[in-house]
Length: 279
Image 1 (cartoon, one colour):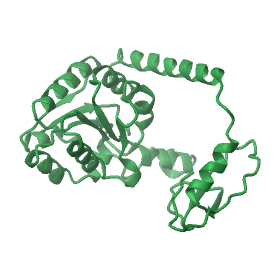
Image 2: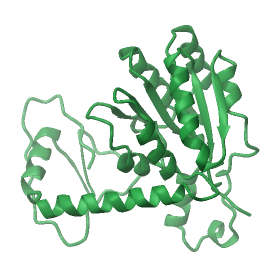
Image 3: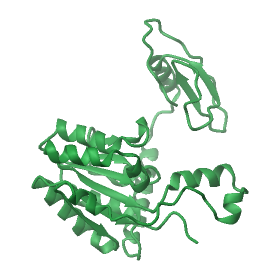
Image 4: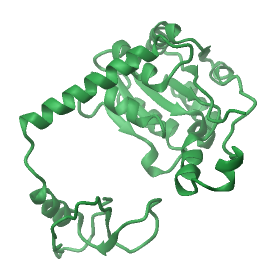
């Protein structure tokens, strides 16, 4: 559900009905639009505070068994992430696992990965409330600007931006790196490079599973090739960067990156993942 507060002083009321067995998406907004990328089951003009209070009252109380099940699920996810570290190709889960181990206690993470967000949310356990910012809600291209703002607000704390190569293309990279250099706002940029736009490809597969793109394995506009040398972009603005291609090299690269921003250097680590499209 997406809720948008209204400027009206009147309190709207929402009738909560018993949910069916099937999940439903409810969009609550000040205006009826089709801005959501998913199809809402029901749309209505509601005040966010009243809506959330009504929905919260209907939620079942959490039990210890629920918490135990969630802990077991997270343990399984972390075990899978560790196993990925033994493979030949870097995975997003392995980066998230290693980042969780390498992050200092005062670190802040800003995220603009799309298809890899789940790995970060599940596996970055050392972050405290207020230490994780999601930059993609304003639309793609917000990651670097958000990270610069966070760094400006917390100059003494290390700020790490996790970003996909697709999202990176939407950002004003030259302007952002120029600002980082001029204003002395060193960021550690972790670029998850799967050579394409996986979220767009997965949308096509989900919406048109029998379509031409799936049948011919031809997903037009979803590849980013040939692979740029992203590390050079940071170096052009007085920073440092490197390409990382083997799982066993991830932790050391992260530590070098954290050390570099501690010395005031903008740093970009280019992690090469399994490509979105294969012949």
